[in-house]
Image 1 (cartoon, rainbow, N blue to C red):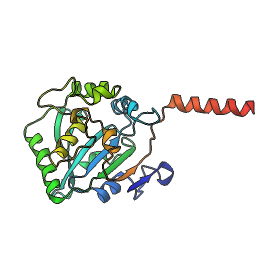
Image 2 (image 1 turned 90 degrees about the vertical axis):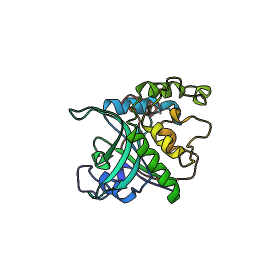
Image 3 (image 1 turned 180 degrees about the vertical axis):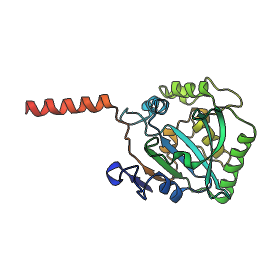
Image 4 (image 1 turned 60 degrees about the vertical axis):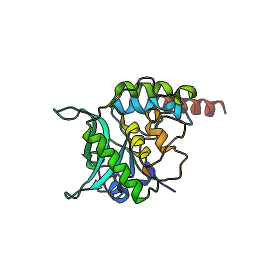
Length: 240
């Protein structure tokens, strides 16, 4: 099952549109489900572009980050477990952390947002939550080197099936954390591909049965390619 809202289906991102990021996440969030987002800043675009070998059309991926929904707390907020480079505050945080999902309400910063439901049983959800909290308690770090190793492996089927060449103990990047938590529940997104070679795009494209709910405002076509397509269309029209 897939629910997709495209730009033409949405009102102005800064309006009170009930299909904005906040209402969308409130509607689809549930313990153990997976969140994906695609950001617009330089780092997020770089990560999306790096996954272009995994996409069918060679454009950048829709996704730059993945996280796991933990639970709704007594503050009424949904909390997520993620591994991230949080550089927005004076106190820089690197690695596994717990945050309110409200950080992804900004549709301008995160034009693409998704919630994936792999139909986990209550027991599996509990295993996912426990695995995430274990990582949080162990203060696992964010590994830029592992991320680079995953990017290298995207260009080679042989490397994809091997362990991450730049793997580090006690470190995980975002999608590797999600795979680690789900592996505790017996779920492999891409059987045969090690968890530290799993990218956000891989989770979205997993062959395992799952329901996908998403809002897409940035389809990943670069400005250069858009100009190129436009010029080719104009040239073809003039020749006709």
